[in-house]
Amino acid sequence: MLKTNNLVRKMHACETMGATTVICTDKTGTLTQNKMQVKECTFGKLTPELAEGIAVNSTASLDFSESQPRPIGNPTEGALLLWLHTNKYDYRRLKEASNTKNEIPFSTERKYMSTTVFSAVTNREVTYTKGAPEIVFGMCDSSDIDEVTLKESLQKYQDSAYRTLGFAIDKHFVGVVAIEDPVREDVPDAVKECMNAGIMVKIVTGDTPGTAKQIGREIGLWADADTDRNIITGTELAELSDEKLQECVLDLKIIARARPMDKKRLVEALQARNQVVAVTGDGTNDAPALHQANVGLSMGAGTAVAKEASDITIIDNSFSSIGKAVMWGRSLYKNIQRFLLFQLTVNVTACCIVFVGALVGKDSPLTVTQMLWINLIMDTFGAMALASLPPSKDVMKDKPRKRGSEHVNKIGNWAYFKEQWKLGAFIINKPMLGEILSVGIFFFVLLFAFLLIFQHADINSMTDFLNIHFSGNGEVSHYEQTLLFSIFVWTHFFYLFNARAFETGESVLLNLFSKKFWSKGFWTIVCVIVFGQLLITEVMFKFFNVEPMLHNAEHPNGWLDLLIIIGFSSLVLWIREIWQLFKK
Image (tube, rainbow, N blue to C red; front, side, top):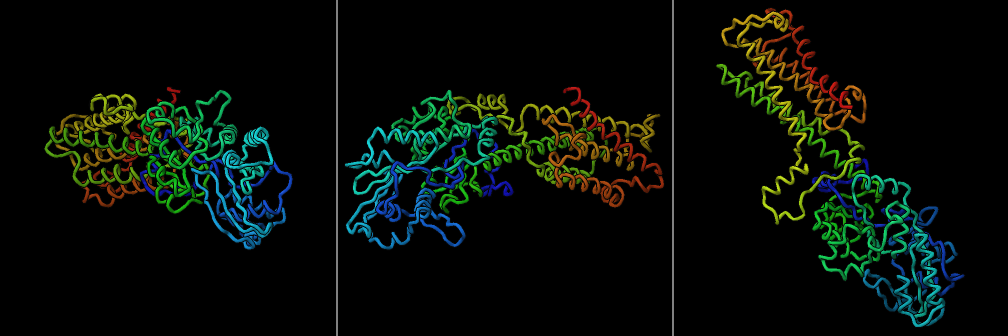
């Protein structure tokens, strides 16, 4: 996941991302490039007094160590300083020349900031204010622009998805600056992919509703059919009771003029509606929402507090990386299902053959050391092989896993269990259980049939099955036990490939050399199992109570028996391939 710019901080978040049903995302830097620049303004010329106001009423700075200055700190304020630089104003000199008297820092509640200085431009005390245009305009006693013109200008800027800032000098409204932050090129496709995967995407931003809606249009989230029911402001959200919010929360696509605690309340409302929520955040005040979410996604450029509260850090800050995290999570869940399918099928077969075999014979058909090797294959090697499979983009065509009732406490435990089972909410679903039981019992019946034949007929070679004479004494010879043990291992070896392709609808043989279907780890484990099985039967045969098949004087055709067993066992794979062909 790190290669896809997802730094996992808490391991459980990998699988949880695959179950995500809602992504609450910031706009700036996540959906947009975070490369802000001033595009337009309502005043004709940048005056020295306003330039001083921008310089002193700012927490950002510029780094001049490279050929082009680079903003440090708040990207919006950084864009204003770059604008000063473009207009031949040195913000450092303006700031050093003035004498700061008082500061009111920006907050999401106030939505403005002010700085009072003794101005080097006017030689008097001046208060500079900047913030949300409607807020700053309402604080002023006079203005260079009337309210109607202001609204028209704001609507024009918002329709272009510009971020807007209003400026005032001593309670005199000067005008508005429009700042552009282009949408990331890969975001529309990433949003579409998530929506096609059944995931709801919600934008949580401090921008105006108009700007937020335009960004929503550009990324494919906001449609022409959407209405006011699909957007809400932070103020309107605060006025809703928890019950009312839960009623409308699934319809919301955009939360504009949002405050940090609005994000946390939104997450809580979604979780109350039985949703699995992933939320992004980069600031210290985002920590409560990141902690509350099922998966908290901090940004690589975020604060240390936000990263500490999160489960995954998105290194490149991009929404497209969130979509990749979902793909990894869903693929991981599928891999766990495949491993359980393989493991439990082998367990059903092994338990049945050992238990029933011990009832009909004097000894167990499989020795302790042989069972140890079988368990090693299915537990350790099987997990390693199936867990190392690469993620598949096909999982993004599926809908999120079902979660069952929203009202767990209102129904009985058994009723809840039955509902979850019907929805397929358990990791072992109906198709898996059917496969485990049917294949496991089939393998048991097959091996039990061989066991009975070995007990009541003298089999010295697999070719003896062409002409069986039942005259045995009810005991299984060491060589017959070798044949039974080999049949068990090789049939389940080929079933490992079937488990890989379970519920994919894909052909194992047609994808045999596909890098997207397999992994180096899988083929490494395949080689280990083959080598290990040959090592057991040909080198360590005494320890495992078997006889060699490739160098046995009493059974010179052992090599042929081995080839027959491998060929016969491969029918497990061929039968599935033929079945898939007919299903298509």
